[in-house]
Amino acid sequence: MKDTHETNLPAEETGKLEETKAPEVTPENNIAAEVETTGTVEETTETATDATVTVEEATANAIGKLSKEEILEKLTELVNAAAETARNEVESLKQAFYKIHRAEVEESKKTFLEDGGEEKDFVAPEDEAENKLKELLTVYKEKRAAILAEEDRVKAANYALKLQLIDQLKILTESQDDFNKLYNDFKDIQQRWKEIKLVPQEHANELWKNYQTYSERFYDIIKINNQFRDYDFKKNLELKTALCETVEKLQTEPDVVSAFHQLQKLHQQWREIGPVAKELREELWARFKAASTVINKRHQEHFESLKSKEQENLIAKTAICEEIEGIDFEALKTFKDWEEKNKEVIALQEKWKTIGFAPKKSNVKIFERFRAACDVYFNKKSTFYKGIKEEMEKNLELKKALCEKAEALKDSTEWKSTTEKMIALQKEWKTIGSVARKHSDIVWKRFISACDYFFEQKNKNVSSQKSVEQTNLAAKKALIEKINKLDETLATDDALAELKGLMAEWNAIGHVPFKEKDKIYKEYHEAVDNQFDRLKVDQTDRKMQSYRSNLNDMTSGEHGKGKLYGEREKLMRMYDRMKNELQTYENNIGFLSISSKGGGGLVKEMERKIEKLKDEMALIIKKIDAIDENLE
Image (cartoon, rainbow, N blue to C red; front, side):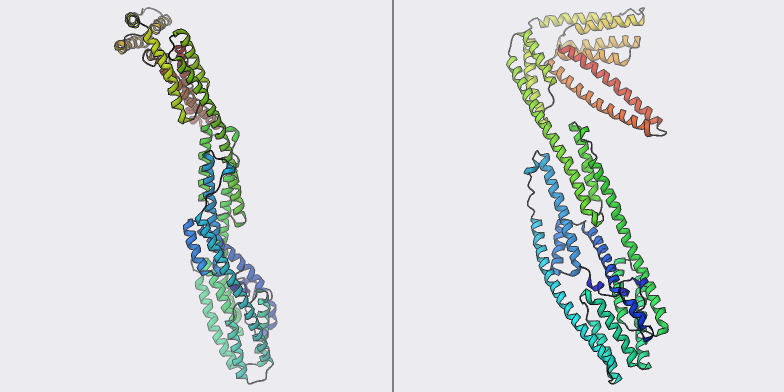
């Protein structure tokens, strides 16, 4: 529905000044006035409609910042008022409410799906606020229907009254009564015409045209004397000059929308005021028109700026949709991949919330596109998690079966054969994939406890262990003495070969008494480090030799095999992490090499990091191989 307070006015009231003339009519310009007033109501309707739409968009932007509770509070006030000006605001409040409501439902649905629920089983929770909204809208529609019906009745009555006034005005133009009486009757008709406001839109232009025609004819036919005519012109000049001053002040009004609406009312007043002296008409009208043009231009620029911002918002929202739609699901193969991508999607959703409205014709469409893209992503994610969950459950059953086998073997005294079986179970364990985090530690502790128990019993069964440890201690002391007295006249390669041979002998010697372990280990490493320093051995070889000794000590204590398996899993995790990090560096260096200018320093730094990672990964592989040798 258009705002009838504006659209029932001729063009001078709407600020479309470039196509209209001053409304003062005298016998000299009667014909021109009739031509100029034709079609002005249609132009006014178009201008007012554009203004109404842009004001609605500005109001919608403000409403978009309200919460559901604030929306209901504001809507309650509007429902109680049930004013015509509130209709578009009520619609904006409803749209803003359902935007929040849909977002809450989508969040509930996302949580439901992430918790493992099926999309077909999802039921949106009941929202009491939505029920309250529907009640308020029902009351508002009933009130508005009653108000509109009353407005239609009033317009019809006003139309009939104005037809009567035109008939009375026509009679005045044909009457030969006393001039004073005719003049008073004419002024009375003018006053009553002003007091009657709204009429049906389809009759507004015709009514005004007929009223203007007979008003002009009255001045022509009655031949009003100069005294009354000049007095009327003088009063009209005062009123129209005051209107010009008011419009000129509106040029600096900060609220351009308010200034525009005030201008419409001033145009209505202008046309209701009669003519001024002929020699002043063009000048006065030009002044009024010029001031009005400034206000109309500011109003147009204001809403063009709003439309420009909405177009920018549409571009930003389209980019978000394209980014989500462009996700390569084939590349998302692990939990880590999905978690990283999920953070990106959540960030895009948060960014969407910070962007204002798009143009009205595109706003719903772009939101539906965004929601559809998000639905596709989260459905794919749910499908992936469901498949991984099934695989983990299968792995859990396999590991439980290995636990049962290990528990069945742990009390066996067939040391050799059972040892082989236990080692086979441990190797099989390594081939089984991951299980859910909540089960991982539990099932691992169950398995390793059974393994450790068996190997502990096996170690306790070796009756000569203490005697062997003393023998080993003596052998290691002798070996340290040999390392310290390594022939310094030997060539470096020969000396290094002999040193490694002695180190191999050290690793081959069994355990020593526990209380002597740290001391003998320290003496050994001091001797080896001294020889390494003398022979200038690189750090990698040193680390591996030291690591092998560490492994040897690790297996000598309680739960030795379990410690080795734990160490191996830790190294595997480190290797996987470094592998991913290496992949990232290699991708980045490829990008820098292709697209960066002046990035030589960055490329060199990246290459240095890549080489360092490769060295560390190679060292980890050697350590894993060393562990596997100890497990055989």
